[in-house]
Amino acid sequence: MRLFRFFKAVIQEMKQVSWPGAKQTRHDTGTVVGISVLFAIFFAIVDWIVQFGLKFVA
Image 1 (cartoon, rainbow, N blue to C red):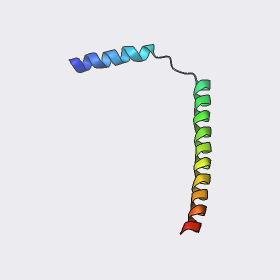
Image 2: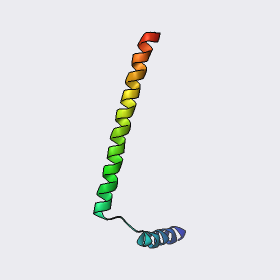
Image 3: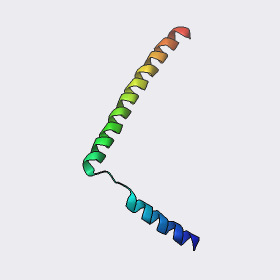
Image 4: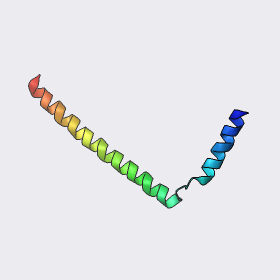
C-alpha cells in the first residue's frame, strides 16, 4: 500500500514540474554538445603536448 502512495505522490509532483519547450531543449542540447566538443579538442591538444614532451624525457 505504501508503494501505491509513493507512485501517486510522484505523479502529483511531476504535474508541478515546469518542463522546457522544444526550442529550449534544442538550445540546451546544442550548448552541451558544443561544450563537449570544445573539451574534447582541449584534452586532445593537452594529450598531444604531453606525449610530445615525454618523447624528450624517455
